[in-house]
Amino acid sequence: MISLAMAKSFPLLILLILLISAFIMPLVKNNRVVKGISLGSMMMAAVLSVITMIYVVKNGSFVYRIGHWDAPWGIEFYISPMEAAIGVLFTWVAGLILWYSLYSLEKEIPSEKLPFYYLLVNVLIGALLGIVYSNDIFNCFVFVEISTLASCGIVVIKDKKENIKAALKYLILSCLGSGLFLMGIAFLYSITGNLNMTFIYKEVAAAQYVYPNVILISVVLFTIGLGVKSAMFPLHTWLPDAHSSAPSVSSALLSSLVLKGFVILLIKILFRALGFTLVKELPILDLILILGSLGMIMGSVFAILQKEIKRVIAYSSVAQVGYIFFGIGLASELGVAVALYHVFGHAVTKAMLFLTVGAMIETTGKKKIEDFKGIGKEMPITLGLFTLGALSMVGIPILPGFVSKWNLALASISAGKPILVAIILISSILNALYYFPVVIHGFFGEENLKDRVYKSKQKPVKEMLPVICLSVAVLFVGLISEPLIQLFSLGLK
Image (cartoon, rainbow, N blue to C red; front, side):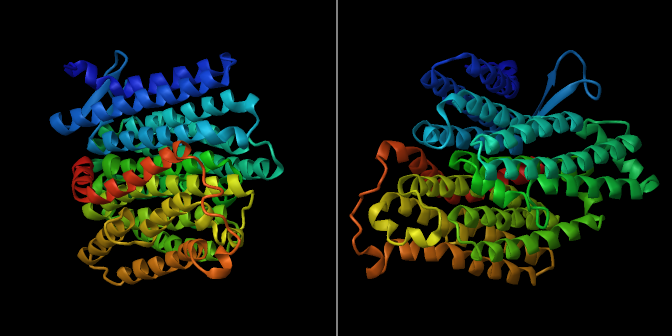
């Protein structure tokens, strides 16, 4: 039986396992051992995150003090059901992506760079979990910077012209976002005298009447700063190049997990540090709602115009992040809980989509959509898994995409904004316009299937097993939607 004190230390232990193992990898000369260390450390973190989740569900939220000083001077982790669930998501999805990388990564990057790549991945996931767990706003900023540098590293690792260009674009815009975020922290600190979110919440209740403009400025800075990093429309310009030029494993990590870490931080600042009551009075939420709605529509419009399949899925991420900001902008408990649920659903679905597309590109050597006509005959399992992800994105019942859209529609009606349901419907139709042609031309059409040999390019089942596990996760997240949304509502209180 795990003791109470030991279970509370698991979030810190997860970070230590990931960060310490990361810096062991470059010292090891054998790539097989490096892969084992990376996957092993991630799976250890995943198991510990599940135990933490079980502990939180049974015993409720807890605070873990790091070092000898109590807050607000010391650093602490705050683990509610929201943080625990996101910790499980990040570690397990990263674990499955790393498992897939064992078979495919060496085909995309030189073998001598593998230790460095796995170092970056462990540091990246460790930093993202630091953002999720930390209750100290400046500590979060430090983890934001670490995750940004690691993200740029996993894009530029290919060492090609387009990767260097995409990584530089990402780095410059991310630095701008970081600067705005830091200014937001400075403004908030100047009126509350605290960096700990629990203490900020206590102080800001009195400060809102004395310094309303300072609070508004800090919230605007947080929203724009983290909006750049999480690809909020129209601050998404770095995303298509970074996601489409990076190795498929990197694309899956960036889209499914990295964007979400910054969204979670914004939710924590808005609804935990400042609180629902205060934030509802600020006009910034209307702006978040408008930009979320625009992202849902324009992300899909841009996706329809693309010719390369990875760019289609990259722009799809802009649309899906739009749904998350749409939920935040509604500023209701249901809206934010559904936004968090969409973080979950989109993470498993988009990881699966990027890995299936990566498998298609790897075996065919082609990138354009028109080159994948008839691919369903040659790679039936791969395109079948892609189809499941596409159906979820479009919003077919039972799957996570449908659950998110249905509940966002309910949240819009309960918030007294039924007109927003039309935006959700239009966005779903646009999603179908770029996902369904890939599936239809892949599986059907006599001219598409002519001269194609059944299963001739299908990767072995053992190599596709991580993606099959992700497909099971997609179905599972859809089926347990009700308890997950209730869990997130609990985590926001």
